[in-house]
Image 1 (cartoon, rainbow, N blue to C red):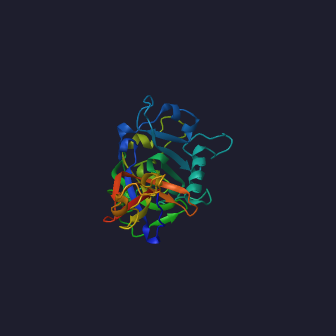
Image 2: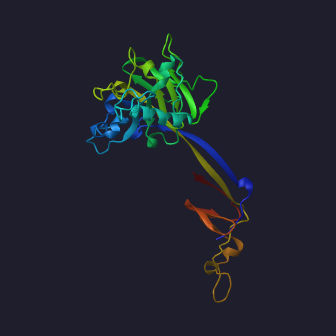
Image 3: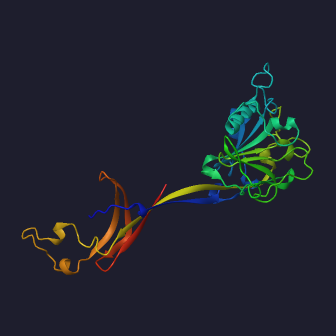
Amino acid sequence: MSFKRLDPEDFLVSADSIAAPAWSNYSASLTSATMVTHASQTGGPSGQYYTNVYNLVESNPLAEAQFAIAYGDLKGSGSFLYNSSIPGLSPSRTVYGQFMNLLFGEDENAGFNYGGPVTNNQTFLAIVVNRARYKQTIKPGSFQLQLSSLTPLITDNSSITPTVEYTNAGRRYTLGSGSFGDGVMPAGSTNGVYGYLYPDVGVIILNPYAIGGSAPLRQFNNNGNDAVTLEGRMTRFFLQSEETVTSDFIFCRARNAEFNYSVNPSFSVSASAGSILYNDFIQNPVTYVTSIGMYNDNNELLAVAKLSKPLKKDFTKEALVRVKLDF
């Protein structure tokens, strides 16, 4: 084993952005046939707060949650009251406050500004992408949602906006109609934009008044039954995830005069006579590099890189091995 101190120019850090389909089975698109809810969840207590959407029916053991849908309203409409003697205190009111804190980190009574009537700003539908589905972030420009109640496709404006808007939840893009990142305000719209995309937290906010046609599209209704669900109106849902993979490249160099002799005395030197066993080690030494170890200044082994096959080394050859560490 031989040692050599690495120089500063032997290190290089690189970051690459990797995009991939967001949904299970490496799919970038969900259809009405692959978006299902499970009665065991919708019929339970949590069904009053949100609805999980899966890719397979409940009886299939391979079913995985893809995203969740929740409805929030400042005045608590759209869901049962916790206590009939306390008006406005309901699951939809709780959901509203939670998302206000998550997205804005401010007064939970604040509202969204859709650009339409002020009363519209007090309600929303939220799509929360499962954390395992979007990895680090949602890729802007990959989101597209088709609803049966709305002819235009819903997408973000990441490809056409000159500036990026930031909130407490990171980046925010406005939703409009168009194709993959070209979302614009619908012509003649009186209810404002379709909503907002928060790619860094995996949240999509929809304006129920803008996407509901003649009536606001809500996830739950006051009676708790026959709810007009957003999931039931979805016909196709495109999405991709995006993550930045940082790689540390270490260039290990063995010049022609280096690492040509074995440092194992039992291999090259006679134990009894102390003489060289093989004359070739004097005139024409040859070694084979099989692995590279990374040590710190305390001589502690931190990482080992194995070569796919031994690398021949002698005075006529120089070797350059690039070690890549991903994190």
